[in-house]
Image (tube, rainbow, N blue to C red; front, side, top):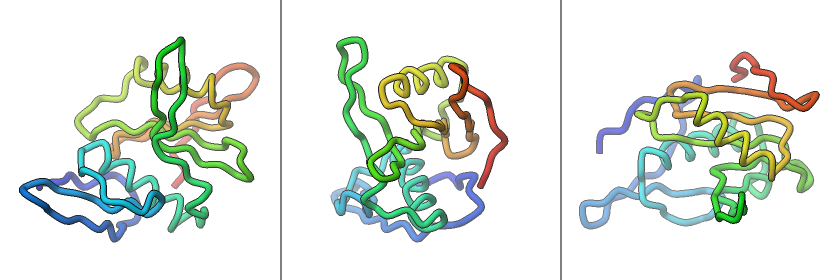
Length: 144
């Protein structure tokens, strides 16, 4: 499988295996092997970033949490918590997906339910950081 190099300062030791022509990646938080999709490739980099670089406990990193938005069940990609309080919502897209105002608005809608202080929208190549304050989002410089 030809996986793109993502725009992270660090490289991570991600475990990948094959089974019947399919690729799987090991998820440290869920302690299971997941189908390696382009979006999962990005999500696992963020998981490793917060765990290894930022020193977050795996129990504070919640992946693919369900939420209900306008009567529809959605899943957030990664939620970084601190003492069960939502701190950072990370929405991951596949590297080939362009980050647009529409994709940012999707993340902001998810956060209207979650209530995290910051959001990150990332396709692994480009990252958009924003903080919610005074009832609107302030875009922040990339902080790795």
